[in-house]
Image (cartoon, rainbow, N blue to C red; front, side):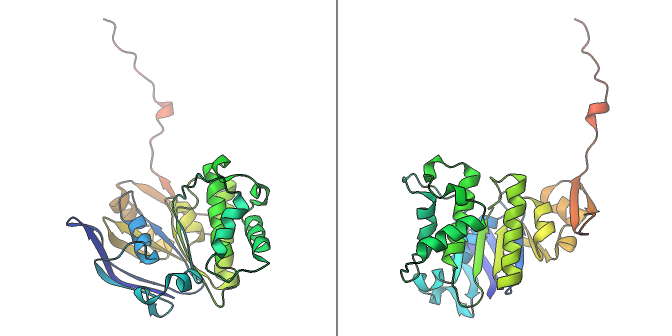
Length: 270
């Protein structure tokens, strides 16, 4: 579905992404992880077509990205950016309706938008104005817009998401990842998602693409990509690797000293 070959982009002589290659198959959930400034968001912008690469090739659905017409591509691929600034007084359902723009107008479009809001647990927000929503509520509306955009697609769709869980509470983080996982398993959609939470990536992803300084450090199942050695190399942090008691999936715990038990020495008297 998606093939990235030797992808790179430079700005004023500085490489933001360099030599990145990977594939994404239908039904697969790929988590892109790495420290701040690793090139994750830039990579997503290259794949979505928002930025043009300096080197390399991107192939979507067996066709070069540059060969797609925007409207045609938008019927197969949806993007959820890190933030969606909008100060217009649109209701949430109207924002979700924008996802139907690439498709021929239909009397069912409003129902499709409302169903998408319901899928992300945001049906109660339908009539709320977007500027009145919290950051987490906006993210769920943006995700619903992407689902509405891919509604009725013939064959698997592609979802590109940049930190969609960043503003969400624990319940909605789990809900969103579970929903994306189901779309992969039941519809055959492919999902590329940028995540800072390595435990979320370890719990839900088929593969993790670990990036560092614009390059691929690892591309493997989470239990192989999130080893203590690779995490220390990428983040400079020592972690312990555990297994989730229910699923056996990897859990990362930073190594810490328990400073709460240390006795503080009072400062000397003057």
